[in-house]
View 1 (cartoon, rainbow, N blue to C red):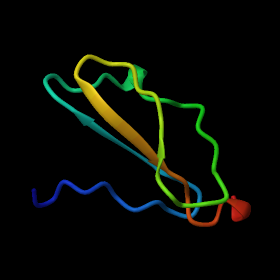
View 2: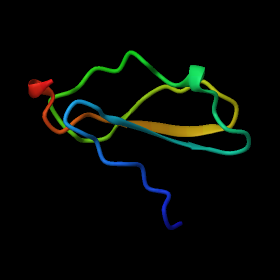
View 3: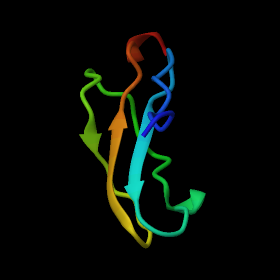
Length: 66
């Protein structure tokens, strides 16, 4: 669908994309302990919430500069 892509990662901030059905996922269910990785390849992450189908984390493009 148009306009549903997550924003790209910034210099020191990655992105978490969550696919879910039903009610919005509460913010407290999102992971807050993610660390930048040496790659920007998407990695699966755990998100606790009703209706969560999958979640991925994309690390910032240059974590060594953070």
